[in-house]
View 1 (cartoon, rainbow, N blue to C red):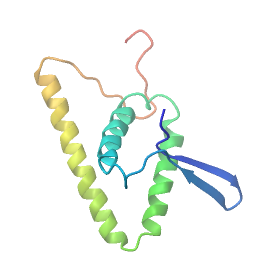
View 2: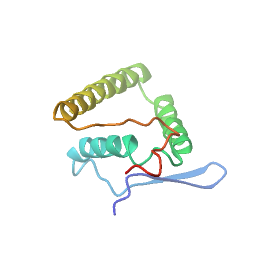
View 3: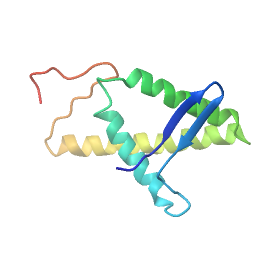
Length: 117
């Protein structure tokens, strides 16, 4: 098991970050992690504590942008990168469905019924 990101509050104004990932040593780990996160967020996260998790992810993103040297450039980069990921996921879903498979998408807070697998 590898820690992608752990954010722990030890007290007022004492927040610490830990990770087992080292992008300096393995630059491809970022793209691999993005793909794995996309799959997790489209499948296993939904139906659980996604509202709290997504709120904290967004809080981290807002803070990251807040301390960014060039916020507009970072927002543009994130917009472009997420648009490419969205298109890739859309293409994969279309190929999946064209192959005759069926996919049901559940939004946040909605989990599949207990009878279905």
